Amino acid sequence: MTPALAFILGGARAGKSRFAQELAQKRAEAAGSSVCFIATAEALDEDMRARIRRHQAERPASWRVIEEPRALAAAYAQAAEAGVVLVDCLTLLVSNWLLSMPDDEANCLNAIETTLAAFLQTLARREQTVIVVSNEVGLGIVPDNALARRYRDLLGRVNQSVAAAATEAYFVVAGIPWRVK
Image (cartoon, rainbow, N blue to C red; front, top):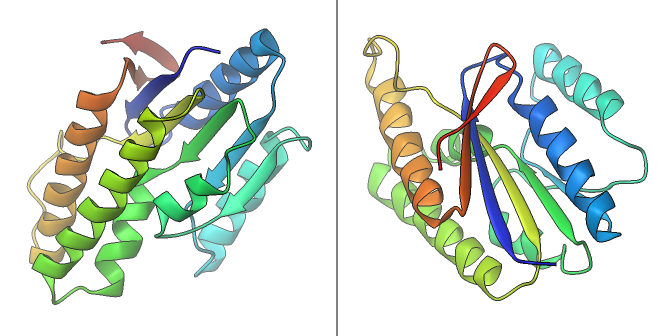
């Protein structure tokens, strides 16, 4: 299997996860390998619990799932046996970090950059296909509060880093993936 990083970006409810799952399944079948799904969501309220249940129902039962809200590099280290790794999503990973230290932007940014760098370094040494999903939150209006602006800016930086490292990138709009890289 040729190592690859596919980055899938789009707005909320755009079809990113569905496209990512289809791509993961296709790549795994073509390579005769397994899929490991790294989930970053935390079930902190009923809405998120419902979203998690819906995503679980949409995934093949044969996929291994690692639930890890912040330590992406550590979760990825546990996925060495899979031919395809799907990370869904960076949007929640960044949110989880920011909400865990909302008044310490410098340390939050450092923690995110450290885990992302470790993830990308490990990825470069493996013969896997890795698919990473994230939201594009910078296309709308400027948020009216400082925490939301910090979030938008942090996620924008993370998205740029992953897109730069990606061998392919897609922007999903209304369920239609456009290959942009």
